[in-house]
Image 1 (tube, rainbow, N blue to C red):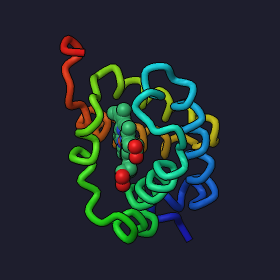
Image 2: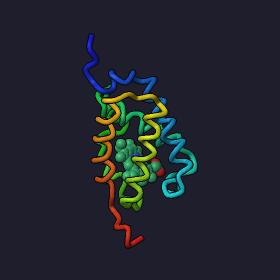
Image 3: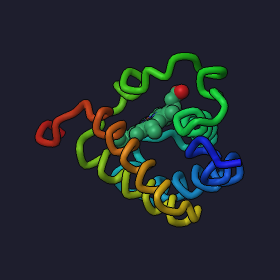
Image 4: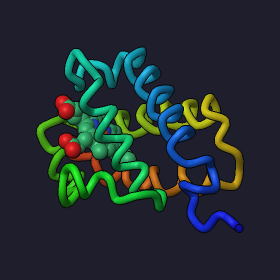
Length: 128
Ligand code: HEM
């Protein structure tokens, strides 16, 4: 059987768990990103696991637990600039390498997430 989704191709739930752990460990060390998040990453980690599973073709876990993603709206309470998007993507790329997600899946995922990250930008650099 050929894997039919990126989710399956990269190794499913086990890989997704590694990716999300590696990602938030990096966010936690990032001086620009850390202050936007609450003291504990537990909730956001869980939700991101649901979201990425769904985004890359696994079970529709995010929808099941949180409904319509409406991600831009959910990010509006946080002032997100281009620099935040860039830092977020750098954490994600490092996490993908750490989770040993191979090409071409890694590039396809980064491409998709790059669009999403810049879509979250809601604050001009010069006003912060
Ligand atoms: C939630 C920051 C991009 C997916 C959050 C939260 C913050 C945040 C502060 C809320 C944490 C809390 O609950 O207090 C950022 C920043 C980004 C970014 C600075 C830079 C562009 C993204 C992207 C995705 C994403 C690209 C999609 C892959 C999520 C999800 C949640 C979340 C799924 C949980 C939403 C919920 O409450 O259900 N993010 N985010 N974020 N973010 Fe992001």
